[in-house]
Each structure stands twice: as C-alpha cells, then as structure tokens.
Length: 243
Ligand SMILES: NC(=O)C1=CN([C@@H]2O[C@H](COP(=O)(O)OP(=O)(O)OC[C@H]3O[C@@H](n4cnc5c(N)ncnc54)[C@H](O)[C@@H]3O)[C@@H](O)[C@H]2O)[C@H](O)CC1
Ligand SMILES: [K+]
Image (cartoon, rainbow, N blue to C red; front, side):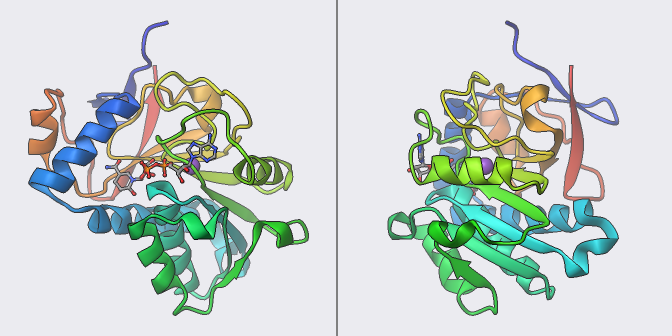
C-alpha cells in the first residue's frame, strides 16, 4: 500500500516520515541544530494543552481532564501539558504508567508538575476517576511491540471511559511507520502529531489530525533531504488531511 500523503487546508503537502526518520530528525536537532529535547518537549506540551482547551470549547473551565503519561518523550509532553492546564485552574489528574522508569526529561517535567496543585494518581486508582477528556501521552513513535501492562490496561481504560481522547503524536499502540496495531490501541477523537506526520497515521486510526510546530528549523529537514515547505501560518498547529 502506498504511503499516505498529508496536506494542510491551504494545500501544502507535508512530507510523511517513518519512526526511524523521525528519530533521525530528533538526533539532528538535539545534536546539531537545536532546539534541545527540553525545549521541544515544552513546545509539544504547550501546544497539547492549547489544543485540549480548543477541543473542549466553552466547557473548558469545568472540565475534568485525565492525562495518561508514559516514561519517554511522549509522556514528557503529556506531563508538560498537564502543568499548563493546571495553571489555568482546570481539574487535571495525572496518571504515570510506570513512574519509576521516567527518562531524564520527562522526570524534569514531573518535578515541575509537583509544584502545581495538580493531582497525581497511580494506575490502580484510575477506575473511579470522573473524566471529561483523556489525554493520551503513553507511547509515541517509540512503540516496540504490543503494549504490555500497565500501559495496555490504561489504553483499555481510556477507550472504555466514555470520554473523548486527544492523542499526542501517535495514538498509543499504533505503529508510527506501518499503521499496524500489534495489540491494544488508543481510539482517539483527535491526534496532534509533532513536527512532521508519520507514515502510520492512517485516517481511520487518528481521528481529526493536527500537526504541531515544536520549533524545528528548516535546515534540519533539508539535511534529511526532505522537500519541506513551511506549513504553519500565524498559529502553532494546523489541521492535516490525508489523501
Ligand atoms: N522531534 C520530535 O518528534 C520530538 C518528539 N517528542 C516526543 O517523544 C516521543 C518519542 O520519545 P521516545 O522516548 O523515543 O519514545 P516514546 O515516548 O514514544 O515511547 C517510549 C516509551 O514507551 C514505552 N514502550 C514502548 N513500547 C512499549 C510496549 N510495547 N508496551 C509498553 N510500553 C512500551 C517505553 O518503555 C518508553 O517508556 C515522540 O513520540 C513525541 O511524543 C519529544 O517530546 C520532543 C521532540
Ligand atoms: K500517544
């Protein structure tokens, strides 16, 4: 099957990349051009918080949001978004799947979150949590196989919660390169993918798809040999349609 192609409302085609290519983009930015991982994760989290507010609409002030976070870069973006939402007086409950395994940058995001009034709960006490919006920041393009416990249980909880799901970068459980689902997979209403769309973001898997800017300079994409035309206008994300 040919790879999906992604376009903005203005008709600009944004090149789709595999997980390996995205990892190379990450390497070039963090090792050569910048921004660093802290900066990109903060940009990802702020965009995610803003999009959560946008999809909630006028009920945002009374919304109860549950953020599900993994231990990697995806989780870090979710923890960052949780802080920005708490800083707007919203009821946010953060649930980190495996808090003891947090990588360095997500752990820093958690450190900052702990200085807010936001709540953090363990996966076991999630069952009775009232929720109006679930933010899925469990796994991004780093999926290695069928999601295992406790992440698999959190995916099932989210899908069964009755609340709409906003997925960060890749719906957790979806293979970012092939679009395959080796096991449990988040069923989002919306997906906000970061920097470039991935070849596995099939429309039947993503819900409404948005592309968020995390501050990567054009030079990085040129070094990848990608034909990149700036897709962003005055905002920091754009809707993408798949053809
Ligand atoms: N330039 C960018 O695109 C940026 C993207 N960001 C975000 O970072 C992730 C990629 O981060 P990484 O740490 O490489 O991987 P993930 O967070 O996607 O996943 C790793 C995480 O998931 C766990 N895991 C993997 N497979 C399984 C499984 N089968 N079952 C359970 N758990 C699994 C693994 O243990 C790790 O904990 C990208 O998607 C973006 O969201 C950066 O924030 C900024 C730059
Ligand atoms: K995710």
